[in-house]
Image (cartoon, rainbow, N blue to C red; front, side):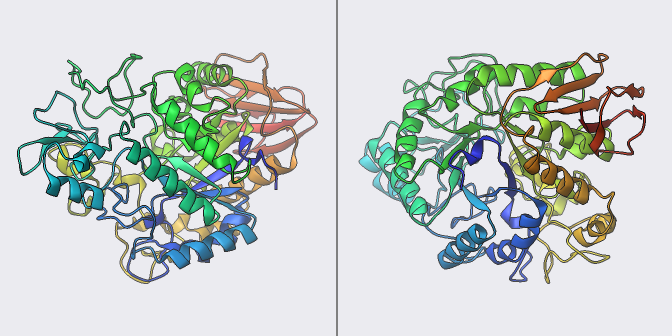
Amino acid sequence: MNGAWWRDAVIYQVYIRSFADGSGDGVGDLAGIRAKLPYLAGLGVDALWITPWYPSPMTDGGYDVADYRDIDPVFGTLADAEALLREAHRHGLRIIVDIVPNHTSDRHPWFQAALAAGPGSPERERYVFRDEPNDWRSVFGGSAWSRAGDGQWYLHLFDATQPDLNWDDPRVREEFLDILRFWLDRGVDGFRIDVAHGMVKDPALPDLGVDHEGLVEPPDRGDHPHWDRPGVHEIFRSWRELARHYGDDRIFVAEAWVDSPRRLARYVRPDELHTAFNFDFLRCPWDAGRMRSVIDSSVEALGAAPATWVLSNHDVKRHVTRYGGGLPRARAALLLMLALPGGAYLYQGEELGLEEVEDLPEEVLRDPKWERSGHTQRGRDGCRVPLPWSGAAPPFGFSTGTPWLPQPARWSAKTVSAQDADPRSTLNLYREALRIRKENPAFGDGALSWLDSPPEVLAFRREPGVVCVVNLGEEPAALPPHRKVLLASGEPGDELPPDAAVWLAV
């Protein structure tokens, strides 16, 4: 296997609760993933990123971890995870697991010991306790501080059930090196690092002076007291050094929300992490000038490191809805993303053209944002609705039970089985795009060169001999001279219609 596989890989994000349920309890699990490995291999992706599978009270969908060396019973067993790793590798798929180092669950033995030991104890040094809170705000709303029973306050940049770890404590650093070893020894191919930019805090814990509630990135400042601190890079250098002992093909990808591509580039220096999600691209609106600017600044800032493009994930509104133009824009965006230099992440269900479910009943909402915002923010449940696999009505083959979030009946036309045999379906567009991308040496890692085009059109060349044209405007656009159409997001013709993209052999 290619040691630098990650430089141009296409990685599929499995939000485990909502992918496929093998046990019939309405919650996705490892058995469900194992049953769908042939589907994923047939789709043409290189690897899976699986969201947290650890024992957890599930107040934040598993990102509140109580034990980093086991599997939550709702998902299966440690033996199931080891079997999944073996089977995925037999299918030619690598497995990336989620590591959550910024915070634990409040049920984690360390935090329970900290509460029991009291102020000034070594147990409390593993977390961030203080006698008086400062003005920091939680990403999920409200204060970032909650009071322990003895009057001290503890820091949680997310939910109150997710106390932040103190990465200045050497025991925390050694513990996570050991956790990485545990999973590397079992054959995982890499780690997605949750909140990679948040692990280190200014030890003085100064007031921010402004209300940054709900923000997960530092707003245009390089000296933020808890986001994107310089000290995170020392941690990641130690992680990279550990991974080297397992071979050059084990990787890290950072979830790092920072204020510029230039700062993101610090995370992917040669002795740190391999890749980092390009959230500037994800957040960019459907506008040709801004898209080109983000692409240029990302590629330029990252230098020798590959860019990692992404359109949707489990924390943001699905891009079918976000772009405001429906499925045609989403299909065009896929061809744009897969033609760019570097690698890409797909979020489960985008290959089916799924939209954000914005009409979930209030009584089923599970995201902690809903409660912490006083029912003013619906949160992220709308992009986490379980996938539709088959059948004419819910649960659409996802489960034999009742899915943990309800699926809209309108998805009957978007199931895998409904799209499977339709050559013009979004599912088959994804399959064909991934097949061409894998077979054609022009795609993946490398450089791109822009071509002259109208202001609302993006046109660039990848060598050898491929041109990608995307029309983000309102009028049809002329196509450059070409030998043949490799793939089009809509009906190819002499001109490219609005909200469409095409790959051309030239």
